[in-house]
Image (cartoon, helix red, strand yellow):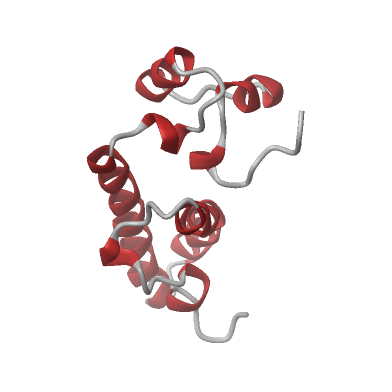
Length: 116
């Protein structure tokens, strides 16, 4: 099997099995019913938009706390950005990124002062 994608949306059931992860009840069922397809491929446009918009909203909320110096928010922001950025890139690659996020650059838009 090829390398496990960094993007959760680009992973298939085989990827999850290979790394011993559980994609969750709803997404796991979708992946089981559609072997070989990525999570994004199993989602309707509306489901995909809802999923990615919730992720972006979570990052924005965490970013605001991180800007205020909240140490836990800063650590959390780094973790969730490490998941969001590959998802955004993957959605751009497969041309399914919602138009509302066309100009989003997670690493640039959510960078904290004094960090790279």
